Image (cartoon, rainbow, N blue to C red; front, side, top):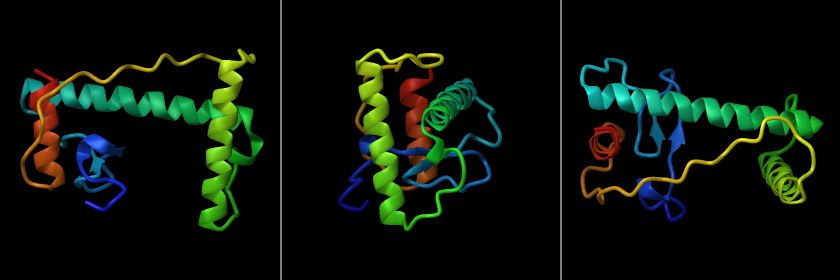
Length: 131
């Protein structure tokens, strides 16, 4: 892992099955043949829906995010971070907005000490959190 993302517990990306599962990008199981995998896929789907809803809120609040950002990556990152900060301030100041999303606190789990491959990490997450 790179210095910014030393292990999967530092954060992972949630992607659909069009992407390859990797150590930093979790995809749903194509074949959910155990209850753990079924539960993982359900949680994965719910998480993606919550993220997409949050992006929808941002797009409604900040028009610049509604279309294509025709900016260099460094400037696009700054714009995105600025929108995140302003969005959080608006929430703190109780500015009107649509559909407040309640964040879900992560559940404690066992430490992972296995291979740094996406499928192995995904299997660990399914075993640890979706019994």
